[in-house]
Amino acid sequence: MNKSEFQKQLLETIGNIENPYHPFVWINGVPKIGEGTYIGGFSEVNAKGADVTIGKYCDIASFVAINAADSHRRCIGLDDFNDVENITLGDKVFVGSHSVILGGVSIGSYSVVAAGTIVRPAKIPPFSLVMGNPMIVKNEYYRREWEEKNGKWSGDDCS
Image: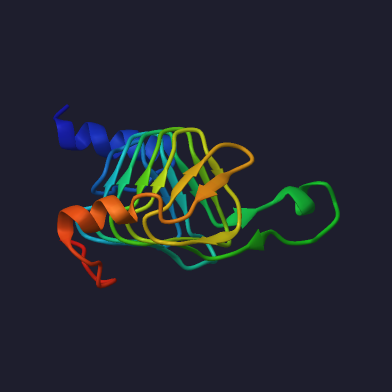
């Protein structure tokens, strides 16, 4: 069996679709993922029923869950449906391994999500550092250093 046949059988066996990242990246729904973005193995992007946008040149480590749906209220009988909210990651966002990004999150460009962080619904400014559970946001943590190296940020750089 050649590599292509093996990959096709593997994807069928695990209920996944082919994607440009890794055979063990699960993509549900139709997220918008910018050029140059990397997604590590064993990560999930669940955009089923929501708008999930991941910008250009992002680095999503392995074992990351980006999940627009929350089923806990349906599961325990309090609702008849899943709660689904949009997710947006700007350009050049780094998401560390074993992090979770939940529906209702917007993360500005050039931000870093530290490994193991659970990002709950919030609007996080560009250049921020997000870490922990519960999450702590250090607004614009990287901005001054970035501007010292690159000049004033115009809000549209993604080279």
